[in-house]
Amino acid sequence: MASICELHQQLVNKERSAVEITTEALDRINKLEPTLKSFLCITADRALQQARQVDAKIAAGDEIGLLAGIPIAVKDNMCTEGITTTCGSKILANFVPPYESTVTTKLIEAGAVILGKTNLDEFAMGSSTENSAFQITANPWDITRVPGGSSGGSAAAVAANEAVVALGSDTGGSIRQPASFCGVVGMKPTYGLVSRYGLVAYASSLDQIGPFGRTVKDAAILLNAIAGYDPKDSTSLNVDIPDYTDFLKPSLKPRSKIKIGVIKETFGEGLDPVVEQAVTKAIEVLQSLGAEIQVISCPRFRYGLPTYYIIAPSEASANLARYDGVKYGFRTPDADNLIEMYAKTRAEGFGAEVKRRIMIGTYTLSAGYYDAYYLKAQKVRTLIKQDFDRAFTQVEVLVCPTSPTTAFQAGEKTSDPLSMYLSDLMTIPVNLAGLPAISVPCGFDSQGLPIGMQLIGKVLGESRLFEVAHAYEQATPWHKHNPTIGS
Image (cartoon, rainbow, N blue to C red; front, side, top):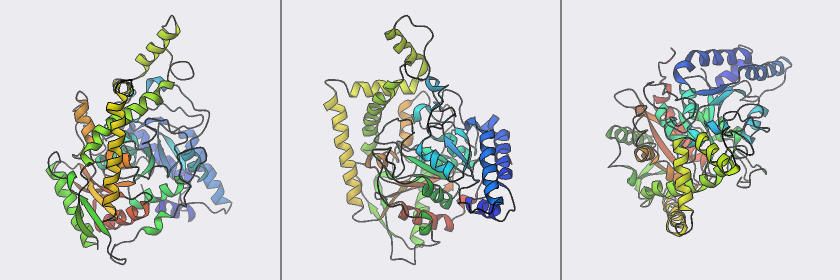
């Protein structure tokens, strides 16, 4: 499937209609879904209706925006009015929101064609999309492997050309890690840049919606559409949003040397040597493009994982208390009283990983343990942020691997939660500090599995990240590779 700009030009020139482009996407979804299982819900009729509206505008001579008529997938934890929003959980299997999330409202207003809702780890808790209550998504590069998580459905859909771009959410790496595993671009914006109104909460101080694309430019165009202040979200940042595509240049040389810091704590023990080699070569490319490279220490970086797994479950235990069988969602049919109904509904409705995190969070917030665990974790979170602040006095952008490994086999880590949690080792500190970060493809291992490089920016430093990521992308061939699935 072509890029956003290529499809836009075809529409404007009347070479193809929005209905034709949408039909092509739906046909590919129907062909691949029995194997790939990226989507939980395909909204074909609504998508074709949206496409017809775009075609009518073009026929009337009206000007259309870049996203008009573009097929897009949306992670199934963003509320869509009249369309089931399950969060990959049995407890919300039949939940149809009465309102639209801010991000999907913006997409609809932009004329985008929403193809459907993508699979995810239940309530976005996972790193492999194996925790979904409904199905396991496959990696398009090797269907025996996971696509990453929790936004694995969105990443796989973009990688397999089922959608041009997609929305995911990132709490501890859930956009960047699957982007790395699936060989696409994925960005986690600055906390508060994109409204969370209508995003079903996992950990409210960490969650952030962001874009997937096959190219940096496509991701930038999608972020242009969804970023901005929203009075419905109390954490939304009221700042001017630039056109991120203005910063996409073929090289870094025309401007004064940009300083890029290599986080030394992210290399060495625990990192797959093939990943290390690919990212090291990518850093050399950045240097050849005009960047000044220096090694930077973020000594508390390694404490991100244990810190996250106290803070995130604590917030989850509070956020998920609303699923009690009373107000909405699943309710057990077999209960004699209210207390039994609460207990059985949650026992039957939640999966094992969600229960595990609720229990961890409830424990760390309980009397006698709050100071020892939760309060201490918040203090370490501040120290991690201070490490980043110090690093950004020396450099403009930080670089490290996105994930310690390439995509692992399905089922390989399901019985070992600690091993699964290590998949987010490189991405979690960014969420704790509220920073923006982007993952771009930077190579393949010997089995043809993609490798991702992570670029981390200052608060509201998305422009610089897009600049560096795009320059690297244009100098390398990795984004031109496509999985063979469906070909």
